[in-house]
Length: 396
Image (cartoon, rainbow, N blue to C red; front, side, top):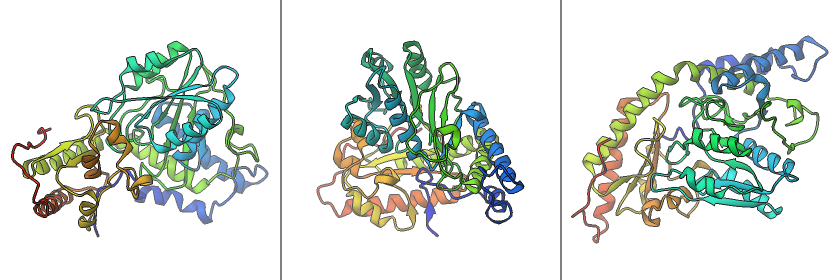
């Protein structure tokens, strides 16, 4: 099997999660909305338990968790739902150029509906300047959406400062917390977050189930549903609940909370091991994103003098990514890396390594050796490539 270093794209279901889910496919298959018999009661009980565990992971109340089909739907619901419900108050949204496409494309749709969106730049480390955000606020601003942790470069934005600023201005604050929840400490009250998108399959749960945290008090969030029907999830998101998936999501959240600190330290050590091996073997490579404010398991590296497509094709037994999974087949360089000011040729030859729960030191050593060998070989095919004067990245 290839070495899997693409955990930011998706994660394998943890065996403990699968064990929790299995009874809800056949034995306890009831519809959680069927309140007239024991099958429905059992399903509802399971959903309530999972909702509480997911809420505990992010410091929320269980009643503030609305289940969706995944993070893309959660992002769409947060942005479109809040913007449309808040239109009498204002029509201005603030976000970043490096956000996930689920946020950026939702903003484009809202612009087509007459909303105004400000796309703030980031610095070379991928961080937004809170003062830029402060200056962007207008009397018509109704929502700020800033990603907690970037899916491509792993950079952690200063959410507490941004959330506090939004709260002081009376503006709602949404964050795509998909890569942060379950990986680093994330508390909605500490960070002054009003809405947060999360998903199960990024924390060793099943695909096809996600959630949107929606604050119920101080303030209560106005939100217009995207899907109408049976009025499930307190009218926010209609549709029959994916009980087995929700049970798996809850178990995944419970495991993530219990193992977060130890797993974070282990993965940070493996990430740094990978970087040391690459940077000591190869010249003209660079770290994309902040070396400090970042996730413990994500490493994005640019390789000079290499054709990006050839690099990906040659890494036949190491699963990595050249960008976000949803846009990895794009011929264009990553919009995130371009937003950092990375030159297009380097952006095209950059790789994202994302480690996970089942990554081993042996796999890291093999991947480092394979990448180094492939990059060296490809550079030999380019006569104009010169290592003279190039430097390896810092030893982190």
